[in-house]
Length: 325
Ligand SMILES: *Cc1c(COP(=O)(O)O)cnc(C)c1O
Image 1: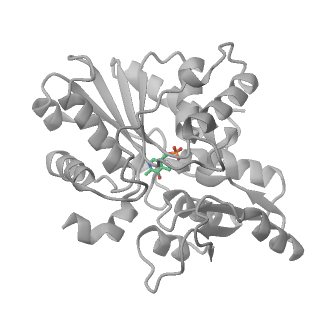
Image 2 (image 1 turned 180 degrees about the horizontal axis):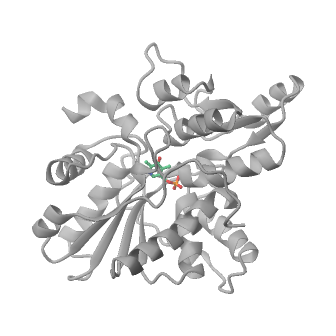
Image 3 (image 1 turned 180 degrees about the vertical axis):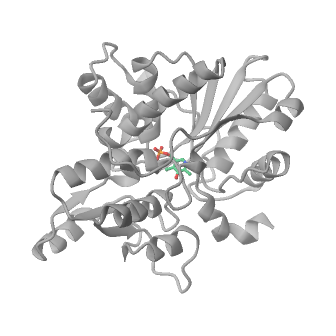
């Protein structure tokens, strides 16, 4: 199952030390996992999920992919690229009204050949079944990828990512104590949670919540638990998970999804100016701020090896030019 994928990216992604920031935060050793460099039309964490989702679509004989997200969705942009590679038709349902000018991920999704449907307040795939019916009436065979690619199939990408990280840690003779990352539609968190069990990674996950809203009436913790529960069955993991086992740091999501504050901007500038690495304003800027703030407040034991899992998102930075200057 874990080998049943369609190759879309360059793996393993680099695992690097943040040398300068480790000097500034001298009580910690800081590392970064570069999923901004997965290579699929400017990279990002959805590439790992799409390798499994696209394979399943092809195996099922589908010719059309439908998925959904915000206008600046990295997931939708990477899906559009994956469809171009695999020769599939791509329909994206994006929240809001059609803007006069396409920029950031929206521009890239359109450039990559996706058909874009603007769905107003519905940015989490509420209209997928309607679009699917219309396409089926045109004799298309549709494969629906849920919001953010977050189901068990997509999460397998991050089960496999733990295996990849484990091999890198062994090769570099390194141990990681904490892994910070942006968690939003839950597939990455579910995959890492399952992978941690399957490959016995000892690091503690610190998912930073990005979006305080629910998805289809479920909290992010519930979404993650549902995928993890299904995954323990399929992957033959003996442990049983409860809601209290799904950790989520909600301290940084109060301003709402896609709202950029001084916090995100300071985090972006800090990593850019110390290490020459670019974060995005929506996900990684917020999560990296959460990590630096947690270190500043000594919420993490001194002396820990701390990894930031960079999940990509760079194209969205161009949508926030006014905030960043
Ligand atoms: C989608 C995304 C995330 C969150 O991953 P989920 O699996 O949706 O929780 C984090 N960072 C970036 C840049 C993303 O595009």
